[in-house]
Length: 210
Image (cartoon, rainbow, N blue to C red; front, side, top):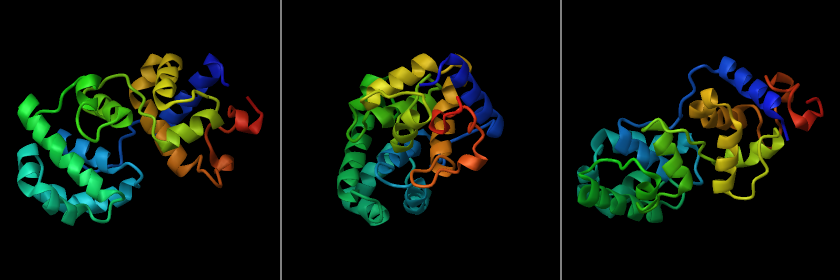
C-alpha cells in the first residue's frame, strides 16, 4: 500500500492531468442525474446515455416520470441491463420523492438509501455531485484499481469508501472518485493497462517502483 507521500503524488498528478473531471453520465438536472446513476448499474455510461437522451428530452422531473409510468419508461430504457427492475425502482423512487420530499432530492445518505434502487454507490454519487459532500463513490473501476495502485484493500464497498476518505488529502476528496474512475476506464484498464503512458507509473506498486 502507498504511504501518505505516495497518495499525495497520485492525486497531484491525476489532478494536473485532468483539472476539472466530471461524470460522463448525461443529465439535465439533479433528478435526471439520479435516474441516470440508478440506470448505470452493470452498464457503461455510453449505453445509459443512449437511452436517456430521448427520455430526458421528455421527462425531467418526478411527476413527469410517474405520469410516464413503468411500461412507458421501459420503452425508453429497454437497451439497459436489468431494465424491468430499474424501471420499477425509478417509478417508485419518483413517487416517493413527490410524497416525502416535495419532488426534491434529499441530502442525507439515510434518506437517499431509503429510495427504491438507491444503494451506497448511487447515494455517494448524489451526495458528491449534487451536494458537494466529501464522498468517494466506489464503482467497479474503483473497486478494481484501488488495490492495484496501492490505495485500499478494504473488503466491502462501504469500507473501501471510508478507507479512501481517511487517506486521500482533503483538497482532492471532492474530485477523487472522478479521477480514479476515469483512470480505471481509460488508462488502468482491466486486461491491458496502459502503464507506459500512465502518469503515476513510477509510484504504482504494480510496477514495484514506489
